Image 1: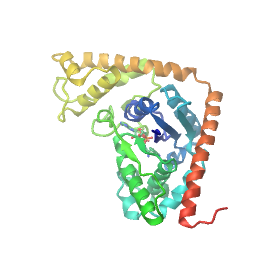
Image 2: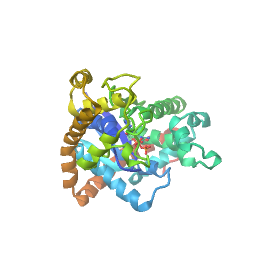
Image 3: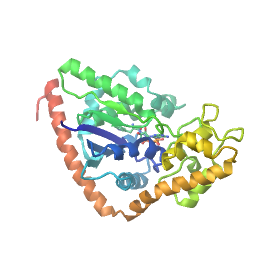
Image 4: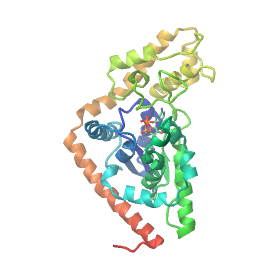
Length: 328
Ligand code: ATP
Ligand code: LTN
C-alpha cells in the first residue's frame, strides 16, 4: 500500500515556542516514517505582516534548523522554503479565483490579525488562506498535522479542492487535518485564555525552544496561576490546566498522576518541577540545534526545494490543463 502524504508549515515570524512544538512538530516527527512528508518554512505567509528583512532571513533559517533539531529526518522528509517553489503563489492565484469574499471574511485568524485596522488591513492577510490551500493541494496531501487554530483554514482548503474537482473534474486530493487531542492549543503563560503565540511582543508569555534553562525557570516561576491553591485540571482552572498539560507532554506522566503527586503541595514546588521537566525535555533538542552547521542546512534546503518543485510543477501542469490554460 502506498504511503499517505503529509504537508505542514510554520511561519518564520518569530521565535518558535513549545506550543508550536507540542501542537505541531512533535506530531510530524512521530508520523514521519509511516508517511511521505513535506515540511515547509512558509516565508510568503510571514510577510503578510511587515517583517524586518534581516530578521526574516535569520528566522527562516532558524525554523529549518528547528525542524531538523526536533528530529525530522531529511531522508524521510522534504524540507524546503516556500518562496523557493514559485508554484505556491501561482496556484494561490488560481485558487483565489474560486474563493468567495465571505469565506475569507469569516476566518478567525484574519479577524484577529486585522483587529482594529479597518480599511488599512493588508490584502495578503485576507487572501492568506488561499496560499495555505495552495501549499497543501500542490502535493496531493492526505494529512495536515497542525494545532487547533488552523482547523478552519484546512476546512476551507477541503472546500476549495472539492469546488475545483466539481468544476473541472477529479484533479485534487481532499486533505484532512490531524489535530492531537491534548496539546493542540497551548496557552500563553501571561493569559491562559489566549493561545501561546510567537508574535506576542512579550517574550515572557512563551517558552522559546531555544530558551536557556535559567530563562525557562524564570518564565515558569512568573507564569500566571488561578485563584485557590490546589493543582487540579478543569475549566475553572485554565492556567493550572495549561501548566499540567505542558508537564504531561514533556514528562510522559499522566495528568491524574500529576494531580495526585501535587495534592496538598504549593504552586512553587509544582512550578519548580515543571521547569525541570521542560528543560530536560528540550535538552537533546537544544544540543542538536547547537551542533547544526548552517551551510549544511542550506544544502538540505536547496535539495528539498528541488524535490518539492518537481511535484508542484506536475500538479500545476494538471491544474492548468483542466482549466483550459494553454501550456507554455
Ligand atoms: P503567530 O502567533 O505569529 O501567528 P504561531 O505561534 O501561531 O504564530 P504559526 O506559524 O502560526 O505559529 O503556527 C505553526 C504551527 O504551530 C501551526 O500548526 C499551529 O497550529 C501550531 N501552533 C501555534 N501556536 C500553538 C499553540 N499555542 N498551541 C499548539 N499549537 C500551536
Ligand atoms: N497558516 C499556518 C501556517 C501554514 C500551514 C500551511 C500549515 C501555512 N501553510 C500549510 C499547514 C499547512 C499558521 O498560521 N500556523
